[in-house]
Length: 461
Ligand code: GDP
Ligand code: ZN
Image 1 (cartoon, rainbow, N blue to C red):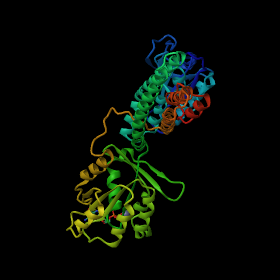
Image 2 (cartoon, protein in one colour):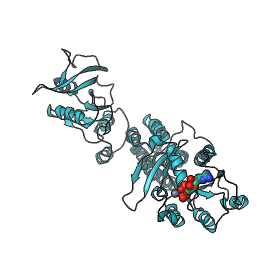
Image 3 (cartoon, rainbow, N blue to C red):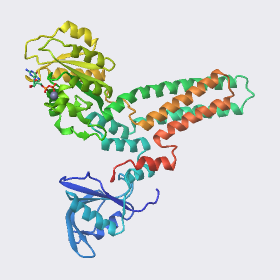
Image 4 (cartoon, protein in one colour):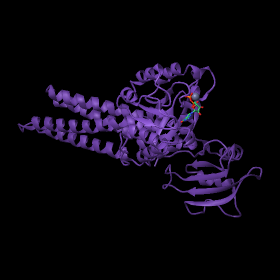
């Protein structure tokens, strides 16, 4: 194991939680925390590993009691970083936890850099790079499904697959090497080329399959950009409130810095929608609503999915028709609202305009058809079938870029073989594919890349 100094950071999110946790990791972790720990005659240096202890944190210089705490002692190697770890549970809020942290730092521990705990876990061989990135995704995960995806990746699903590809490529490269050493056999050259061809084709197929999951993985992580559009008074605000109210727990509003675009995340049957430009929809009375159609057009350009709301208690207006053609470039769901009122809309005409996109009838007022609407949204995303829970997804931009480069390298292998290039040149492209895949799992990464990656982590992780 590598030698590191002892580091500490607050590992719970800032804010007014019931407890806050300071994580300390390194050879000196137990010894230093013990200097500030008081509980009768108990010494943390003598307690069994993976046990938790009640006591107080006291400044040994002034004997001042700083907080009442629970302290976990976790000895290497069965810890997150594979180093000795101590976790101090302090009272919530920023004051107590900060004072305890300040004291620990004063006793000789260094404040951890963002991502440093995870970096150590990686460097000490506890996790590989794709798992480390999954930790980062987990911290940012916005919905249950994205969370499950990150957990799976942390579990090493992707890594296992990538390592298998690498092993297979390496086997072939070894064979090629052996064959080159015995050029006296006549059919060696042919055999070598055949092997390279088969393996390059094979691995390329798998990598392309993985890349296909990438788009879905990205949506699961970042949310599907969705615009609610429709004429004034058709029920856009009501729909927005309906979606938000169903899912209060994970709604977050992020005020945009450019323009006044507001994004809100809602989770519809596992599909994370990033509702864009909700600012205009929220303001019910003002001019923004009056220019609803123009505003809708703007929201459209940023959306990959559209909820087109029509008031079915009125005949279709030219503006409604215009919105259909504006939406035609993205997938959309037509929502015929106000079914509690008599139907005036020409449904055959709506079906023609919808052009195969789903149509759902609802009454936001009477709370009718809401479930069908949510199902239609989920079906659209998952193409009617719930995605297999144990599928391996690629959701990380860096991984996608590396997989794309791998495909290029494999294409070079195939082109080289087709053009009857010398085997050692083809071999180089195959080796390139092998190292690109290695960058995903971190089996072949440089230091700067590591620093850059881990600095993206939250402090305390
Ligand atoms: P927006 O202008 O498109 O955002 O529409 P709003 O959501 O502000 O709704 C306009 C009006 O229609 C409000 O008075 C709502 O209460 C009403 N409304 C919304 N949904 C329904 C519905 O399903 N049935 C009826 N009868 N009225 C509705
Ligand atoms: Zn409105």
